[in-house]
Amino acid sequence: AQSVTQLDSQVPVFEEAPVELRCNYSSSVSVYLFWYVQYPNQGLQLLLKYLSGSTLVESINGFEAEFNKSQTSFHLRKPSVHISDTAEYFCAVAYKGGNKLTFGTGTQLKVEL
Amino acid sequence: GAGVSQSPSNKVTEKGKDVELRCDPISGHTALYWYRQSLGQGLEFLIYFQGNSAPDKSGLPSDRFSAERTGGSVSTLTIQRTQQEDSAVYLCASRPDGINQPQHFGDGTRLSIL
Image (cartoon, rainbow over all chains, first blue to last red; front, side):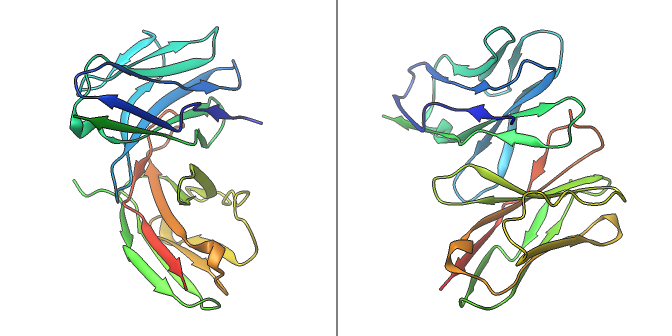
């Protein structure tokens, strides 16, 4: 069965420090990869996605993620976090030919002063 | 433009009652999903609609759960004879045609069963 693993359920970090949120998926077949962010009492919002081409993708607010096919990973990074980045982050994978996204269990990022 | 709209935003009801949750997807989006998010948990897939095809109901947890999508647009998720374990946030998402298209989520309905 398809699965997405987010090993860290919570990641505390100080403001302006770098952060990496880890994501691994279970299969090496052709995939589309997504990171979503969820702020309190809101639905999920797309942060960035990998469909094809360059393995490094970026969001407008400074996050980036790198698709690593050999390690079946899609880790999310930001070199300097802000208080406003405090939220829950979900990694998701869609398999070409499928019709559903499989989500990880989420990582709660808490940015502290 | 208008995003995915869900109503009500909050619903409190007594155990054993039936509830209906509504989702208005983005106009033109052919695919619609329902998910359940319990406290501290990830997203649990419930059901998927694509155009006029038969829905994928493989995620519905019991026969008390059902959903329909009328006219390829608005969807209603119905839970009959609610139980306390049904308490959760129910999220709806829609997307254009193509699995590589991102899903757009509503803000969810927070369901509390007393």
